[in-house]
Length: 155
Image (cartoon, rainbow, N blue to C red):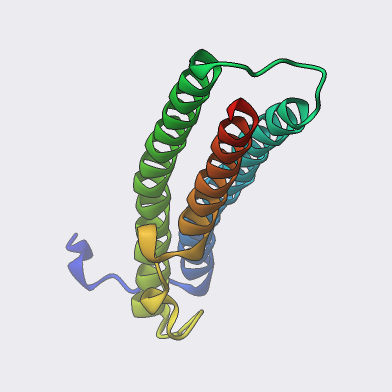
């Protein structure tokens, strides 16, 4: 029997649609869970830096001398580098999930002659997306403020 001319019945079509939709949804779910972790990681970094800055703003801790400033520069550089590393890896994984999601969406569109989300393939990705740029900017801003506070207190 030659299956090349087999036309799927409506039940087969529904199963195919459901399977492709499930794969598409799984890709989106991975992306969404990662985005939640991405922001939690950033909030943790920002909270630590803001707490450290707040402590150093008080007179309860002596910040006399250059060693504290050097340690804070090391802290700021290491934390910023860690955040960049985190974001670069997230961008790669997020792009992979979005590419897979787009692939399944395209398969659904081609097979069933429908458009689920017009124009969706033109969305920003990677560093063009606002999220990583925003998060890294806040980290750099907070680290700069920390260094400014320490520098001002050591003068």
